Image (cartoon, rainbow, N blue to C red; front, top):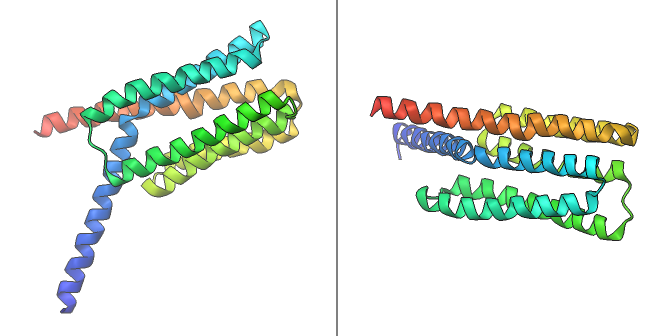
Length: 199
């Protein structure tokens, strides 16, 4: 193999990786609605817990409802859009982290042992892990900033009085779920419009 052929092969591989990363970002934009859904579910659970003082009912009910809605809607959306290796990796990360959060929260709730600061900080750390892993796969700084938001909040949660945990969680939910989800949905609509114009 000549040096020129080696160079062309490397260029082809690099272009393939770039295409896969772009497809992964488009796939993340396509699923932006899930961030909005889960952000809304978090806010409902927070409000229900705060005003009706029923956190042991509010969180499981809203999280299970959000899971069911996610499964139903995503199964229909998957039929409309074929999966790529990167989109499978991203959904795998979210399924793994979501399952870990569910197991942790379920065990913590029924054991009645968790310290509220450690409990919430662990959830924030896990959400940061998912966002960080995906930002590395997609080389996307915006999602890394969301991971850092969750991690900074986790550190703060360890040190603040328990009365500050809810405001921190509300802020994180508004930015890390709702804000980021709306941003992804905006990008998807814009990209779709541009593809139609270029077609």
